[in-house]
Length: 264
Ligand code: ZN
Image (cartoon, rainbow, N blue to C red; front, side):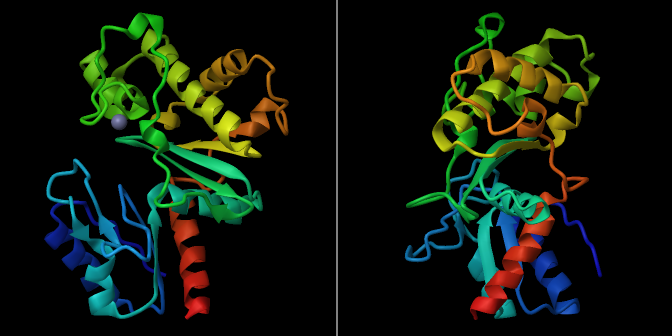
């Protein structure tokens, strides 16, 4: 009915604008999918907080509490990638899937039998460790915590730091893309070996480059070496989101909000 996009600036400004929107457009429940790391353990004293993010000003922000105290409605709270995974489940009916976003950061959300995975916290698939590409050993990676974890070598800012220019300006035949596909193929391989999903979905700005998915499929196939029999053809197994324009999280958040309002 109404759509708004609010830039992420300071917590105070961003949350004030968010609250203004919902004061003008009252709703009975909200699905909130946020960048992390988040405290999603309802038993924790810091449930609903963004925790130790490197994003300036946002560490230890009580995101859920800031909205709940003012709006006083049920709010489902999870990561942006979990919300995306949920949206893809709703759109396709597939209940065992992994959703990766490759953009300014890398994150992964997974569903098993329709439910989020995770015990004490949400998964952190973006920070998994990967084997370095032989032609990429000079690049130290940019993750402030781990250097050359997956996000440190394959996110949008990592591409820019390695090449000295933005990804959109790098030609399609540049080796950068093969290096990147090697890392994303490993993320898909690790997800296949650890979670045995029916589908792995790659979303986010970097995957908007039309040639990327084919490169990832090819390298994934080589790395897998037929060790696992896939549940479907490779072209149905490693896929882009069915929701257009990065809409998976929005769809997932609507479904999560509806489920949350039923629980009340
Ligand atoms: Zn990391």
